[in-house]
Length: 365
Image (tube, rainbow, N blue to C red; front, side, top):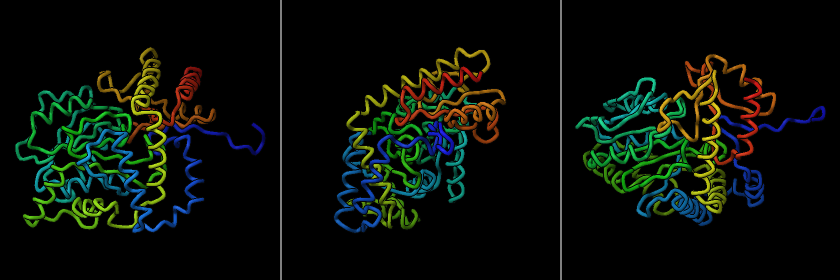
């Protein structure tokens, strides 16, 4: 590398993360097509909305009677879900900081948020979990970015089967588009785009099913407030005409549409297989390490997309050494900042990227 030349970095941070390989091409095309000046009430935008929604439904296997909403963030999505689909009581399954945050937001908007916390996430077995009778909605952070705990979709489906009258909402922020969801048993899912889709932050997607929208209407008929400009009713009414209640992040919707097309060419199956292969490489190394190891002990609950490794206080020195080689990985979350490292495993990360990263980690250790 010559003097003044900037080292090309690969971001294994868990969000924002490495941008999708074709993003630069799509950005250039967006500027050429003047997408940033596109009127969000125009037919061109409606066409863009429809194309993006249709592409997401195809990629994520979403039924036709579900709607796609565009909002600002996954954090906003948590609040919108509670406001529009919970009259009194929500039930939260917590295996880390983001599940806890969702519960806190429910409390802050005046709901009775009942929380079941899996301490230290040794095993998130939902078989014997009793959901409170009063709970109207079960809120699950399916892939907990803070701890690397991933709840298998089969566990969530079984929970829904035992509680068919309750809505089930899942946070798939750091598992989409990898996760394969059977929407017969899921009423709401949401994600933001700066992780698995490799895009700039500032856009999130809510996937809302008919039962969720019915709950919103029932609450409105009872005179219960469900939010304002971004209530499920408002979002749904506009979405029927492929519009949004307010001026949206048009550029990011355009980029999402473009990346979804790229992913469809690869196929969701290919993305899943590659993700699993890379996850096996990462966990395979740390399971054989005599010093560092996966934070989640049960392999069934180890996240394929956001592995979290216990490095016994060495996080900063590992991250600094890798940074000098052009590899940026994540620190641990909150109080585990120095004890953990977090390594993103998204579609933008190639098998070669992961292999090279692990070689540097071997050298450092």
